[in-house]
Image (cartoon, rainbow, N blue to C red):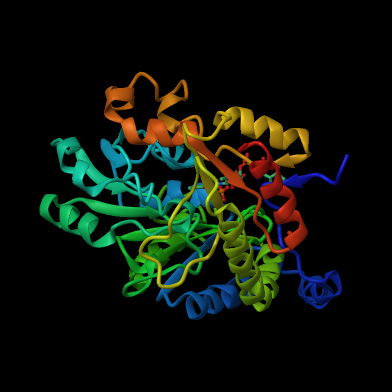
Length: 370
Ligand code: T4K
């Protein structure tokens, strides 16, 4: 059997480059609670991403939970069912009811034309996802939010480095939340961040992620422990030195896939929409009815060859037990998301994937197309 290929593999810099960072941590004995690497990474990320303020977090999920707390979001929030389950879980952890709205068939993001019909007097915010790093229709969403006085919190877990028509996509909405999980384009092992529009909001969020402490004796909010450690922050600084190479290799793999899959009946690549700069975080394909195998059959045949693509995002969040009973989870309300989630496979994409690996994967897809 040939070597296994997983949907992703974290990019890691040469180990010896990390040693000097560790030596500094060992010498200072500052392990966490906003140490020097934490501060340096926040500034470095602001400069790299083109955003004003960033608050680092221990992971993307805690950052989402905290973002909702920071804006005091309550009652009902409109969101997408086509995402990783953490999107809706962050709402549930705040006692908020998710209201699922269908996605656009091209972008696979929340369909702005369907949002207004889901707004009720209890709606307080919209939580869209830039799925696979494809920007949402940020202008249309903002217009609706302004008209109905709603907050917008973007789950931007997939959108590191993505730029839309007006610069970083992370500058849209009231807050944007990043994930730096091992499986992401930019990883700090575990990690995440909230992009904030102004210093006051960042300060509030910094208090929230540190139990609400302002100083040794003053607690101003019911905070949580969401801090990123020094070791993760140091690793992030090193990763940042390599991220352009990572993005270049991802772009090459994306374009090789598109060339090699071109013209296979029933295999549809998702077109990039709205990015001026993309990050090639995922490589989703849709298996249409004119392909001889179903999506699940193709997924299985690929696994037989030791290639482990993933069905991101199947099942839909709205099909998980804790959401399935909601009126907005009804299949009839989510026809596009339901269809896409039955057709999608994310093919492996990561910097160390070789051209031969990509050919091995696409050969299997070609082989079964006849
Ligand atoms: N919002 C959205 C839209 C998200 O996609 C996510 C996370 C979040 C919020 C929450 O952010 P975090 O709290 O995670 O920061 C993975 C990730 O665990 C998750 O972070 C990610 N989305 C989601 C899309 O994918 P799984 O359960 O599919 O991961 P897992 O462990 O099966 O890993 C996939 C493959 O990656 C493995 O087959 C092998 C490879 N791998 C994985 C890990 C963890 C490695 O080679 N090394 C590793 O350390 O969820």
